[in-house]
Length: 225
Image (cartoon, rainbow, N blue to C red; front, top):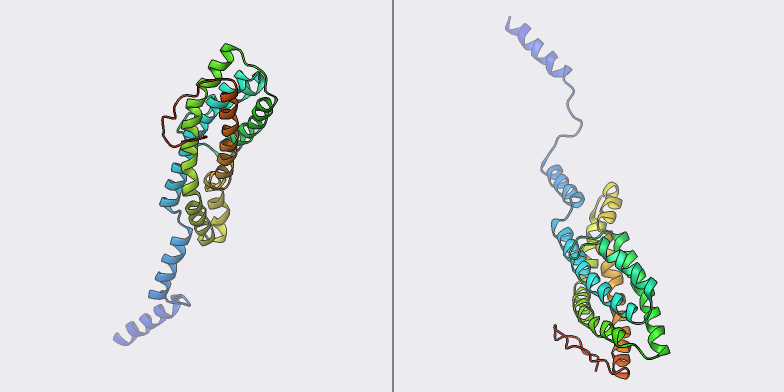
């Protein structure tokens, strides 16, 4: 009877298909490494949100300032287009890449037209001078907030590239898309900010020529003298 039971057990063991490769400590380590590579980095996404929110605050103030300058200089269509864009985005909100790009491109185009109007000179009315002077306060705030991004841009780009490169092939496109807003801000906004500073110097010089009193910078960080 014992012999029959032993034979049955041997037959049962033989009928069970065992894995060709047993799971060992090395496999567990490999699994953890692969999981870590494909899992999203909480820190990098939090950093991206902070960076984009920072730009959202800056872009709102910059947009308000440019509307004031544009209206003072008779650029009504440009002012209306900017107003539509900034009203669509709440200040401090997390903007998508398309919205960020739309604002920077429109703002840059408006900048060029403002520069052209300033270069042509011409006397402003008393009402236009008031609008022109009032536009400096949001300009100072916007430049100050936008300038902060430059200090964080390089670090973010480096971290984002590392996160993307460490992702699996299946996750790489997904991670790249998730980080696209932050990458756009980090790559494009420092140059955009420099352009604004260059234009702002012209605006300040024009104010002097027009005997327009420029208000003091509330941030204490911006100086065009």
